[in-house]
Image: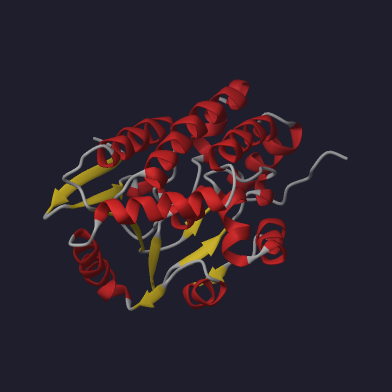
Length: 258
């Protein structure tokens, strides 16, 4: 079964993160499936809008730390491969013509926040929450968060979220500029569906050109993705990273080496 499913109806594609039993966390299979699905929608001219959401109660909890530590002898390789696929998928979605709408149906953490930020528009359910979580386990941002977060909320607020791992409610996400709209949980998919249908009827090529103009105005997107991949892989293989992740999985306070 694919960890990212793709359905298309009336020129609108829906990408569903499909690991609900583990809060849609990202493992190696997810990285490959996400990349493949992103390339598929980005290269299909019949697709004029894309919805991204999560199966089950969570949007995406970020990286699969348990899966990562199962190969703890080669965490750096694991993270380089995972982020290479994730980032290639994000690049394809960022540069495609079709607008990308995130339907944030539950908690987004770590790289899950990156998926929200990478969407052109984001609508959150009232119960949704956001937490960056990286430094809480001794890691650094990936999934375009270090590029997009400060542009969405400003440098100081980005640093607050990344250093303190503060959790934001859906309403706070709206106030801080992480999402465009908050709706009742039961109205989320209908609201996003109506917006996607409206955009699918619009000037797709003009939308794509506009997306790429804004991306160019922000600086080197792919350069930052490469730096994120290199840094998180190195941190994951470090003593701090291994202790942070192990402590999280063992549900204890981390004792970082001094």
